[in-house]
Length: 432
Image (cartoon, rainbow, N blue to C red; front, side):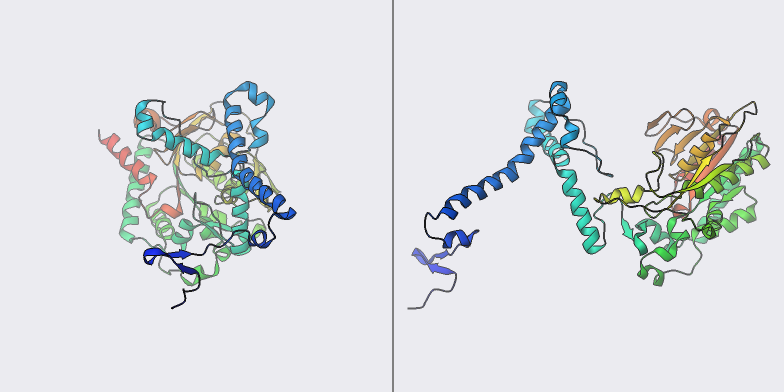
């Protein structure tokens, strides 16, 4: 008779019984009805049930407290759950309760999504998991942005590293882009509207030495988009402010031009470019006064609600808080000179710093901002705004302005971008 293989016993009709492995082998080995076994089994079962059911019960109470004021007064929802994770998707509005929403599973899907994003204890689990990955593997678990940890934990976004070290444009494309900018400048000059283009820097181009080691060996020596555009703008006589060069000139100050945990320049770094933008508009006849500011250093990235010195660090969603130097510029208010100007801004995320510093100088009646041209609209002076594309009439909204400022970050110069789209629509409106 052939012995059964280890781990299996022969059964009827050629079948086999597989030996099970006890989860708690120590309890199985104990004498029957031992005191330890009698106490341990229900205790373990109770703990497992509590682990599963407690979040469910707490979440049910939390969600009820959010909609019933009486429950909220007795059991504050903020005590059970503080929702402060960065970069997490908001919960969509629930579908109406109907036969169709139930049969199509839309209602069930919403309930499942709402629970997954709001169950009590989720934030702690996310933060401790992110902390573990950061400490053990030096990586971020964020899915909101491709974060890269550089030297001394300086944070970068992958797209900025790729542009600086790897991506190179076609020269003819940059020359055509320059011709379009020159054409727009001529339109502004014919209408006596001061105009300037602000080129803003990227963290990777200003601080390449803080990128992870492998990136330096991948650097492409061919001219970058920024270098080609800068040179062609100079040859074409276009009014522009080189924020890249102005930022590099501040490296010797001993204060980081980009904060350790931020992707945008600090307010102190941005101030020099904002100052030069105003100077350029003054040279073209705008009735403005130069910007001045009180420069300082803060050791916390959350020194202001409008600060962007922690926009990457916040996305890591870890438990510990970082402290690092952040350059700060507090803009001085300008004494009233009579008429305040209306200045239109079209740009990306780096424009926020410029717009706020112009606002704080108190010499503008209106600062409408077209974020990435058609993504969002906001007004820096009044604080109003609306998401999504804003109805735009170029004669009424753009060419009626006292000044026009376009902002373009060097990371997207050689790609389809908001300035290219804006110029195309501007030319179409003039042709009409």
